[in-house]
Structure formats: C-alpha cells, structure tokens
Image 1: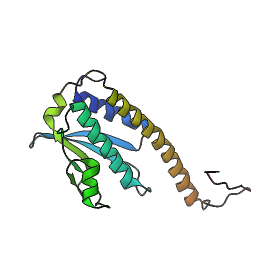
Image 2 (image 1 turned 90 degrees about the vertical axis):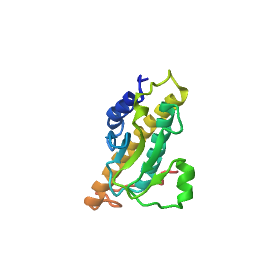
Image 3 (image 1 turned 90 degrees about the horizontal axis):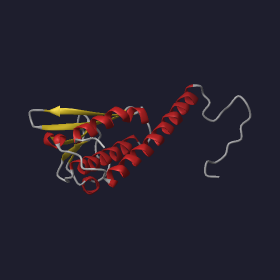
Image 4 (image 1 turned 120 degrees about the vertical axis):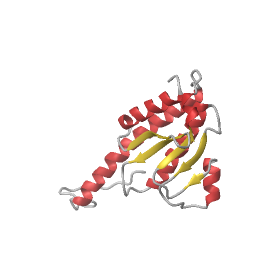
Length: 173
C-alpha cells in the first residue's frame, strides 16, 4: 500500500530478492525520452523454461504497472533479450503491448509521469497480484534448490547413481 507508483516499484524491487534470490528488478530512468524502464533479470542461466519464465514475469509486470497507474496506456512497450519463439501475433495477444525482441534487457518501458501517480486505496486486484508474486517466490526457491541439487549430481556423476541402494519412484505416483 505505497502512496505512489514509484514507491510501489521501489518496494517490489527491494523485497523481491528476499522471496526469490534468482529474480532481480530495477527501475532505470531514460531522461532523454521522459520514460523509465522496469528491468527484470532472472539470474539462472541454462535452465529449462527460462524464456517462458521471463515472458510470464514480464506479463505480470505489465499488468501490475497498469493496475498501479490505473491506466492500460501506462505501458509503452516491452523489451525481451531473446528472439521470439512463437508467431508475433501470439505475443501481441498475450501482452497487448508492442514487444521488441533481441534487446539489451528484459524491461517494461513506460512514461515517467506514471511514477508520480498516487496509488489508490487497497485494491483487491493489487492484493491478488501480490499473492501471485508470493506464490512465484515460493516456487522459485524450490526451483533454485532443485537445479542446484541437479547440478551437484551432474558434477559428481550421481544423476542416476547413488552410493547406497535407492528405490526410484515416479513423482506422480
């Protein structure tokens, strides 16, 4: 319940690494154009689904900014570091904002005036988004441990081998 959009973004960037050390957000000004960028970084390389995780996070950021600013026109465009993996029309429908691929960072670009806008009283949608971020944070902690354990097993040659007898079981059973 921050008083301005700028403070909401600042607090999100401050607390997100606490919930998920692999995610980092930053607010970067582009004074020449009167715009700012919320830059998103996923600090895990070569993990399955990385592109998909980035795209989902960028979608959540665009919707969050639109809700905070109380305007669908708050977002000017979205940038992605990777190349598109699907037809561009699917991206346009999913994001509903222009997207620029193969850029220097993953970012949501918006008009700087949005930062000064007051955040209205408690909005159930913002509360819902906060709950989603918390669930994502829990999942990211689990993924981090899982990938670190897998990396250690690969390094030690124990992916499907153990020193003692182990019964392997399907996770769905």
